[in-house]
Image 1 (tube, chains in turn blue, brown, green):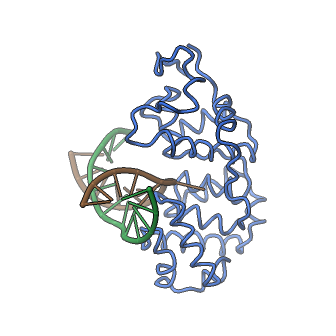
Image 2 (cartoon, chains in turn brown, orange, blue):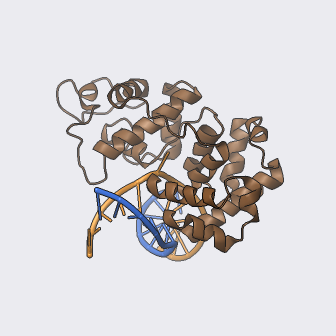
Length: 227
DNA sequence: GCCCAGGTGGGTA
DNA sequence: TACCCACATGGG
């Protein structure tokens, strides 16, 4: 059986779920904060924290930086891990202000890989958070891999069960267009299908919209081919 | 009550 | 390198 490419999968998901339009109307800075706050956290809790930050007038670099750490912790408390996340926000903020004057435009002028490396060097910024910032805040064509993405691909034998972040991202870079709007939707669609059909407990996704695409014969997992 | 959520860093073998 | 664990709140 021939494995479908990621492009076919994204097309199928788009047909099924429609455009997700993540982070469409937010400011880039707000998205940067959200990328940190959503680490292992439901998005609705992030919205509570963002609301608090907005009420406090702290949704811009200088205002947020002027707040004492205990105050930031209070405001972001709904996202959990607030001690750690307050430190992560402070680290990101200091880098952004001291090195780039708090200017999104300056970040957008940088080379994507160089910027990614800088983000990864910051305490609290891992690959998913870095790529989320690149894609959703700065409009670079980065494919964001998350737990859902890996789970969906593993369950459909498109990557090995021990596949890690970089391996999945390389696969995506080979098979998907390096287009920011496309990759924005693609990641959101993997989250959509994962949330609904590929939760940790569910062994197989009986009603998954990918099922027909992946197994015309009705069998789900066949001998996988190496990519 | 229990499980999970748009991860990351640190410690140990 | 490869696990294992802490981090913490809010909703189903």
